[in-house]
Length: 368
Image (cartoon, rainbow, N blue to C red; front, side, top):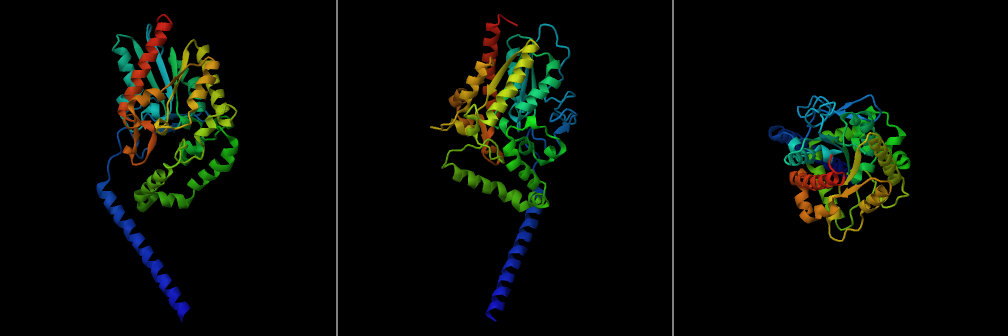
């Protein structure tokens, strides 16, 4: 009798918990349906932001979005061929350059263009940033699309997650639609051991059910915030939210990821120079690198190796430190600790620093 009573009591307890979960799920669904907010400014919402192109691992911005032009750029229409006497700057990058979660006019390429035009200069600054792009995509984009705009200067925006695995970085839906070539993968051992199993899990029915759960969507990010708070006792090294790749892989020029990154930059620099243009690598820090006594700075090695190959670099670390990470980065304004993306004020800081660099470059060249 004792065993039967125990089984019955456990069964009743489990059923009660299940009924409570179902009631909470239903209540949250009704609550969120009533209070559903529009997407943040500059956020694509439910509609896909991307279209898949024929070129391998090169996808374009969807022109069906009102702020995306017919050339797939989050910018005004670009005149081809380039008008005589016009200084043209092409900026390649990922979601930072694109201007994730802020309006198009607040992104630093647009702000830089306005600053330079205020100097009575004929100039175009083209925002070719696409969320999720890596060094490989930026190289391929320039070879296939970017060079047709005849830029005088090509600025390549580097973020630490530019060496992240593309299967994870783009999300399962896009990575399943594309046959990713080996050249796009920074570390093939990591791809086989972690990325492929991860994408398979993201494709499972259990994951899809979890993502549809109002309970998970309500409390999941709060649990992640608690985990992040716990990790603050240790030195943060993550470069993406889902990938296990550490910032430390960029501290050695013999690492697989570092050699992959530098190879793509060298190929891009060669292509840019063959077109008679100049290239700059713009180095964006992560927010946690601005913390006191933080020790890991791959920017130094990247700058050194690029300079040895004739590629100038502009490191924004010290510029950002002058303002502080709360001023420059979005951080928890998005509901999680966003150490990657910039606030509107942060984009303004970048535009001002780039204006200085462009003016210095023009002066050194005797005018363009």
